[in-house]
Image (tube, rainbow, N blue to C red):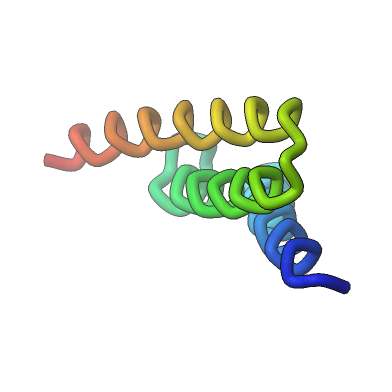
Length: 80
């Protein structure tokens, strides 16, 4: 596997961990952990897509990252 493959695999793994933890009730969809895993996972997956120059997934993962960052901002504001 190439470095780009590893980068994408790490990003997708983080996204799947967040999804699994949410489905099993370990973390809520508005929890800091869930949103942080989504920001990190989608951001890393987006980086891998950029390295591959694959626009459909650059757009998908970029939007996923942006929405997760906004959700994380809302969650952090609620804590203050």
